[in-house]
Length: 523
Image (cartoon, rainbow, N blue to C red; front, side):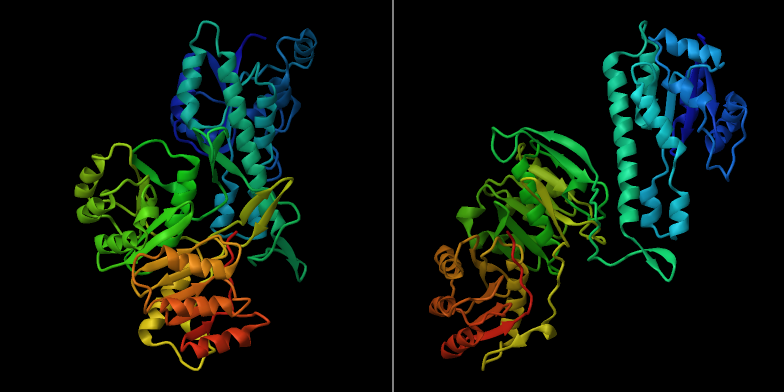
């Protein structure tokens, strides 16, 4: 009962040959199945067949390979219990000391498009069962799911006392995470399946909310603290999302990201990539305090900074185009926490290096891929799920409701302001011209206060600007307050019982006003 055995069955085959050779050199008998066995035999590694051990062939087109007492008994037997060892000996079952398994990436297969029948056939049964068995018995069996840990396994096997307790626990934790992710992907897929004409088909409607929500997240890093120093925090990435997000960013330099940095980087990046012209966005406490357009990134940055220089101090800057040296110099004239962009010229990198603590995040691309999953918000005792707010306004869908229609220049500014207000905390009011924001009123409890606050914050001229409101005006007082600033046009959703009153107020003040029919609350 002292022979050492390792069972290897992996989808990701990188490094498996070297691992098998290392185990063989350390006296292990290698067992395997299917493609892994073929890979090892091709490399002239001696490998035993699971079927030979079980005395039973693979059946049902490979659906049943390792589901046998001679495999799972060898994995699950506790070496510290004489009764377990006696049972193995009585049944002529040899222990299995190392289990190396990783599973077919089910979510990758279905994300590339496949039939329901193909998806079902890609549901692994034996693999997760072996992993759970080995992880359950981690005190006696080493379980490895990640090729990155092959070297660690061999190093630990060379220790005089064998694998230490901490490593055994670490490997078991990774195994349970691996199977949990796998099962969550399958559960998520099946939750979106429906029956049509007697056939099972994936439901591709974005508004389908499953009975049971099973998102899967993987920890990227621990954070120094949360929103406040007394709160612990960590950053997790959404394994089910295809959103090209801040979680994908490469940090080129600077201090570790904080909880608040990540929130602000996300807010800045999402707005920057929604603008189709060269743009710079400056965010403070998740609100865009300045957004500018320009012929070049530096011109866009200058205009964004000019909107609210006081609030911009210590903020987060996002560009939607590659940062060159002039833009890097402008962005670092004052203190900022971080810069995120789809790339940085070599000269820009040299400029930014002079600010050692500045966090520089490289996104490599401005592409926003198809977004999957839901926008989730935690509340005590539960979670709210909704579609992501990806609505893009088209000018011909807007309704001019006043006597005066916007001029072409006003239309350009209105559509720009509407893009910005979508990213401002409600109640939100944004004053803007065609190339930059001029005043931002965020998070006020009344809309008229947001209108007044945005005007009071403005350091650039308000005369001739336009205004965007994320929701309708409940009373005419907001329209009157805007008119007093010298603004000339308003874009808002409409839909109030007092719309006629607000339209009349706009007409009295010679304001052009358009309704979008779409609200953009952001709580």
